[in-house]
Amino acid sequence: MTSSAPFRILTVCTGNICRSPMAERLLQAGFDALAPGEFEVASAGTGALVGSAIEPHVAGFINVFGGSSADFVSRQLTPEILQGQDLVLALTREHRSKIVEMSPGLLRRTFTVRELARLLPEVDADPDAPAAERWKDALSRALRLRSVHPGGPGEDDVVDPFRRSDEVYQQMVQELSPALKSILAWEYQYR
Image (cartoon, rainbow, N blue to C red):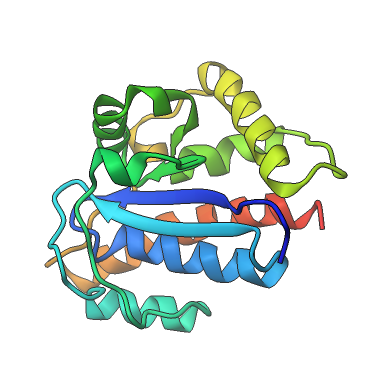
């Protein structure tokens, strides 16, 4: 465990039972494997099904991909939850807008998951910097790239599978999983 505070990441979707918990649990598992104690990942929903567990299909995906779906309780996004976050990862552009409306100070630290995954590979960082410093610097560089490489809903959004067909759950995994792997791979190169 490092002596400095962990780099805090919040993932945000609508109900906080499908997409954001999957992003939370898989990012946390990946970061823990790379750098135990250096990252703290949590999630919330803009219209949360407060107190719910992870949706069973998604819990299965999380477990298959090496995360843990245990002991999860969904919660509503609030300004208090947003305080102190170093990075907020929205699952759609609409979620990103709601986050920034709720906490305008997070504008420079809020991306969609797929957007950040698209921009990070173009960002170089100091390999000797502590993780939190490296990520804060990377976010400011990624923000500058956002205008050069704007994405649309098809590139930035992860489909909401809740109460939809198995095909839509598969689509969610196909949109989200590579983005999470890309974010983790960016950190991995500095280890």
